[in-house]
Length: 77
Image 1 (spheres, rainbow, N blue to C red):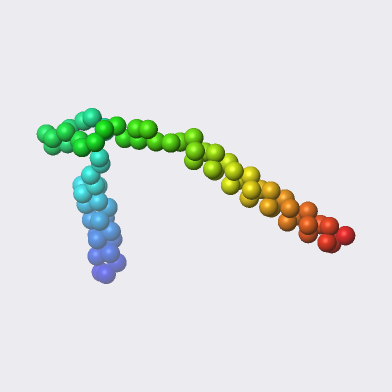
Image 2 (image 1 turned 60 degrees about the vertical axis):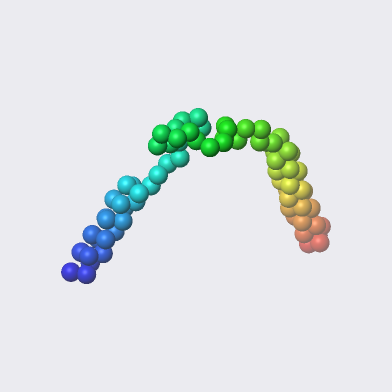
């Protein structure tokens, strides 16, 4: 009998989660009759600097891994 209560409770949680979830409106649309506050989402975000930083960190990480492998191989010889 306890297993049935657990199953019913789990189903109720999933059903209610769908009703309670509220998605944000797209930029420029109205939300319940009022305008959405703010301008476009992500307007003027500096994507280039983040990409350069990501590539630099990935290169440093890869170089370190290669250095460690080469150092280990030369120690074993």
